[in-house]
Amino acid sequence: MSRGPSFGKRRARMLRAASSRLYATRALPRPPSPEFLELLSKYESTTPRPLNLSQLLSFGRPVTPDSVLASVSYVLYELPRRLATRVRFLETLPFIVGTNPYVAQTTKAFQESFQTLAEHPPVRNLQENEEFARMLSDIVQRHANDIPTMAKGFQESSRYMPPEEINAFLDGAIRNRISVRLIAEQHIALTHALHNPPKDGQAMGVVDTKCSPRQMIDMCGSFVTDLCYATLGNAPTIVLDGQVDATFAYIPVHLEYILTELLKNSFRATVEQHDPQGTGLSLPDVLITLSAPPSRAPRSKLNESSAPSIPGEHYLSMRIRDQGGGVSKAHMDRIFSYAFTTANSDTARKNRRIWEQEDDDDDEPLLGVVADQSLRTGMGTIAGLGYGLPMSSLYARYFGGSLEFKSLEGWGSDVFVKLRCLDEAGDSSI
Image (cartoon, rainbow, N blue to C red):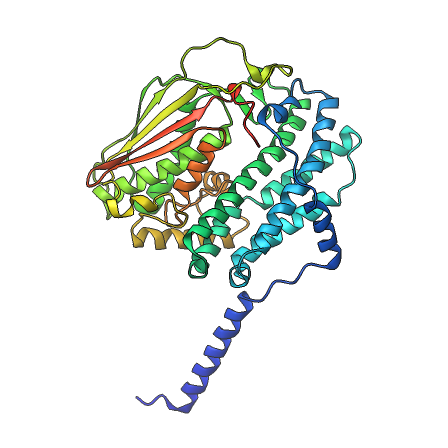
């Protein structure tokens, strides 16, 4: 059947419309105003103050109106400088990378947060601090999806930067993000604790002095199980052994991120190895073994404002073992590279679609409230963006811990995690 000239015209119009939409999404971001550039130059000319964990937590020993006001003063001094540094780093990206819509979106968010904090007047009383803490919470939420957003941008722009430059840039960006969130969330926690003091006394702002890995594994395992069923149609069971009742001083949100990403890797690999069609076949368990820190004197250095910072050698150790087939020798040197993923192409494509739907829907996340909670640290999908393992390693190493990956190709993998007890990590830089 002849389509005639009208078909050609319609097709031409469709192509022009598609081209217009493409270029609309790639529109160049507006350049910053001269006033903004002057403000940025002012703050980037002064480097952030050196800060260690003991100093950060000193604002909460104890939590008083004066200590909260001292904390907000520090936040207003420090965060604009750290954000100014991040904005400048984003601006040094190659032009074609910086104009990627996802990278440009991240840059804009940092510019807005920097300007909001840099122009904020001093906080002089507790009422003003309440308003500031709410604003700070909004800023933290604004950056909830920075990592998956940047992941998408660098995935699209990977041909324009060497992998080692991408890795170096993202290492710096993520470390900066960890420090900024830690400073911000510590102040938010102190503001909350001033009016709602913890009854058990085990919380010191964002640090839980009796953090329970078992409870965190239960919580993260439940989330990853739901996510794995939703994505792959099946999920293994977690078996916990070792010193399962161990507790230690740590930041629960950091442990949550590490556990969730490592469990996502093990769950996904196990299903793809043993039930790739998601038909409900029986799966081998994922085994997690806990080893408590050795016994030590009860004195807690984080609770002694005058005590010198003494490097500690006590760690909570954990092994996550799966039978997901392991990683081939050819890939082992790339497993800690950003955007490298061992997920099969179908899983990766499926999760990129899920991520894009989550990104487009600001009102209700695709996988519900649990996934939305997880997305605040960039944990939304089961695989495909390739950031889980290198980011987990960064979080583990942030306070002097470690993460090692061992593969038995054709059988499975072991991940060994050592997390430094934070009551002996007062010397750790923020």
